[in-house]
Length: 282
Image (cartoon, rainbow, N blue to C red; front, side, top):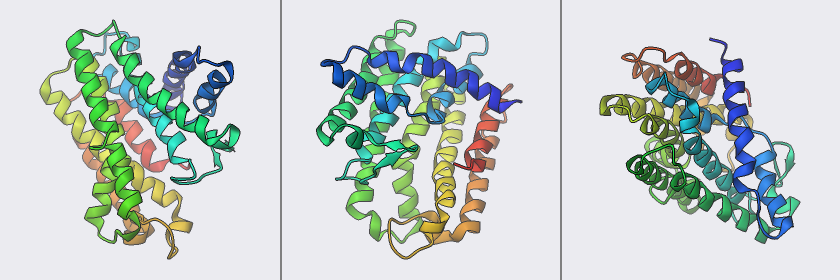
């Protein structure tokens, strides 16, 4: 399949709606600040995964049915980046070649922007009239679990509190299954939940999502290999396994992810997305 064209169409669908989800912030300068991190680009892999899982499980349905879930996932991801960039966290001055929110505005505004994006994600899900109340509850539960202390926030806490001392591959894997993998897992599962797919399909897609979520972090560590092979800084898979070992582990995970899709017909997009995750160059 032409993955680039396929992704471009889904990315356009997401971005046409993304900024409008937070229009009307008060006062006006805060409205601009809310829009800012949503307009700095990005691959939109997480919402694209949501749409891909929905399309696989409901091939004859309109993808727009899964759009609120996809947008909610991206709002959570964006909020996490805004907060991670803060001086008290990763202390980054740039993201995607542009000043981070706390540099473009100030720290207090960046905190409030993150808070607003976080809460708006759940507003989107509660307002999703295309889904039944039962489906909405499942989606809210899924995203809450993935983004809270059992998932993404918990992984970030693990990293801040003891991440620098992690020298065991199992500990590092557990950290990143929460910090990076939990939201990717939720993105895929939420697409399947929107489609109201059968439990066996959801289980298979969960296996797929867990594998690509960890592979995503492995690929990130390879991209950062120059700094990761040093003696200072945060732990990474490259530090523990080396570049070749990390690449090998990522490819093993992708093979397992693709094997999980063996019972599906028309899973080309998810197969291609798995390969894209480990082969990307940025």
